[in-house]
Amino acid sequence: MENPGNQREEPTAGGQRERLKAGDESVAKPPRPWSRKLMWGAGILFIIGAVTMGGAEIYTAQPSFCRSCHIMEPYWQSWSHDMHGAKLGVRCVDCHYAPGERFTVKAKFKGLSQVTSYFSGRAGTARPRAHVADASCLVSECHGDEKYVNKPLPIGEVRTEDRVIGDTVTKVQRTPTVTFLHKTHLDTDEKLKTNEQQLEAVTARLRSQTPVDVFARIEHIARSVRPVAEQAEAIQAELKARELTGLLDDAMELVRLHDMRARLTQLAGLTCASCHGYDATGKNHFTIDMNTCYTCHFTNQAFNAGTGQCLKCHAPPTRQILVHGTPTTAGESTSIMDHRDILERNIDCASCHLDVVQGRSDVNARDCERCHDQARYLEGFETRDIEKVQEYHRVHVAAQRARCPDCHHSVRHELIEPTLVTTSAGFVQPILDECQHCHPNHHREQVELLMGVGGVGVEQAMPNAMFGSRVNCRACHVESGTDFKGAPLIEATATTCVACHEEKYGELMTQWLGELSAYLTESEKAMELVRKRIDERRAQGQAIPPRVEELVGMAAQNLELVQAGNGIHNKNYAVRLLDLGDEYLREAMEILNQPVGEEKTTR
Image: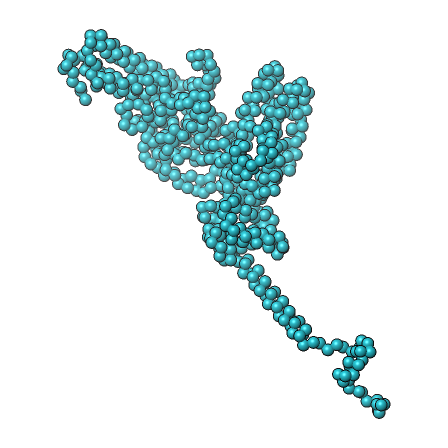
């Protein structure tokens, strides 16, 4: 039927179905009720999921979330009162994720691995792996301005210590003498370039003046990993055997340059975390690991040499220092010392401060075996050279973020407490350690005299006044000499007294030696007379009273200590021991001269 007036025909459901069957694509398919609900549900779930994930991301980024795991409590506590947490509000994720890493899949897996470690019970059983990348420290709002590079930073804090001056405990204020500058340790490119140029020049000179096999041996020694003193000894022996001792200076310079190149290369690989680590005391969240400094500066170095030179880091104290520790011998007056004067006299720091570096930061195979249980990892370890060490650092430090104490033994770098210097044999232990391997208990008598102990009859220790002012063996023993067997030794002479004191002290030592010789002669004669009298009584079949044997034994102990230890090490104490010995011998002689059976002691 026609549509009169061209009026629009309303579509009907049946008509639409007919047109759809006919293939008319202009007709929209009516939505099914279940599909509409599904789309609404999916949209709502997406929104809920997005809100939940966003909220979870915000919540898990808060330090309080980290604290919810009980093993993190000490870390949270140290962060909460550290400058970064308490003052700056820096969150855990701001540092422990590198910039741009936090929202990556890698970061999520790192978090999952921590959760897995926790629930599997592995947390805390291995070396902590928390790490802060340099990029986190150097973002623009933190240290990105690099102002820290040229900022002088004092190492240590002003503190008060007890020193014993003239038998009186005195409070002395000490200020830091080390100022650290990042630039010195970070700008290595120019230093490496200069080192390479110097190395090429020295190598060329040695090549031109030595046979091929000799140069190869010298270079092998220079590249070896061992204390510089051992390298010097090996090179001296090699050159002496080949009658090339005139090349010793260049050969030792080759050693120094190879060593410096290795250290500069390691500096180039330093990261912030190499020196800054977690503060286990809880005082701060992280602190400077001074062992890193000590390991780099003192490994294989002689005292006050190379990278271990005192004045590379320390500024000499500018104040006058009270010296002579407890308890001083009678009649000694308080003395004052100025480090500037000591430096002007060119007196070696080792004379008073050899005790400040104790321990060796070397690495042995047993240290490696804590992590490596296969022999292949230790191949070439015993014969390693500096290139091999550089490879070890690349693999362990750069790739695995190992820290110095993970492999190196610890070094102590500190003064023995001033009040303990005169009462602790550990003060001269670094000296004795050089001899003890072959000579156990060697120089015991000299050390006891210095400390003012070991004799009989003196109730309170009487340390040498110079010993109390931190002067050790090397301050006086500087001259080459020979012993009674003709073997070389380093002896003390009056010139070392004059070096620190005045000219008259040279005469004073001669005077003291004369006085001690006279005292010893008298004591030895008195001992000889008593023993002769004892022999006479025994020859007559008479018993020797126990008190006599006791007195002679005490006198002999004092006499032998002064004879073996050389009384000049502590004149006042030596004279006191000899005087007491003479008293014991006089008492013994009085008893021996009494009629048999009527002996009476004077005690």
